[in-house]
Image (cartoon, rainbow, N blue to C red; front, side, top):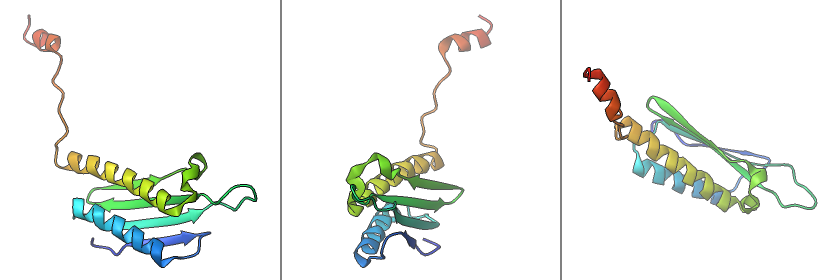
Length: 126
């Protein structure tokens, strides 16, 4: 990666274990595609509610040559994200799927659909 990994915590205490897990996940993305220019990960939690646990929100901004990938999960929708490691896993799984699609586009591996046959006949004057 050309730029160093940035990890930001909002409304969450900084944790070496969480930073380590994020670094591992970013290393896996780099292993898949080594031309990643930069990565910024934000770990945040919503305000604490008395009756509910804290739900973590992970945002990932991957900078690629010629494009960016941004992943942001909505924390209110998934109470499994009360576990910060589950939130990290889910966000990075989404980032990996989007990165795979971006790499296929960069390498032009996307299938080109052929024109319907009747259009070809019309072009020939039949």
